[in-house]
Length: 132
Image (spheres, rainbow, N blue to C red):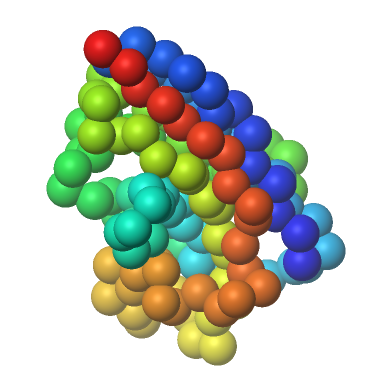
């Protein structure tokens, strides 16, 4: 499994960025896919997620500003980030994990929890810096 993020960069407060995540080496019928972020000294937090049934979840801090979506190409995902704030500055990671059950049987927030993804389920990250 390989995941590669791109699209990070520097942007002024109020601006927008679109992150991309392209996965290869896997085919999952039931899965979670999530965008996470981490700043030094803090735990990795879930930002947005989607499951194989198309259910999306967002962290309260990004609701109404960020949108997760799936691309037309297989294993391609996006995170559209609008109205960026200084506190959105972080390394952003995408992750995908297969599920042993139909995703619709799970709590929708399951896919937003970093602990539910294994060590090998992550990309290397892309840095987003928001400045005033």
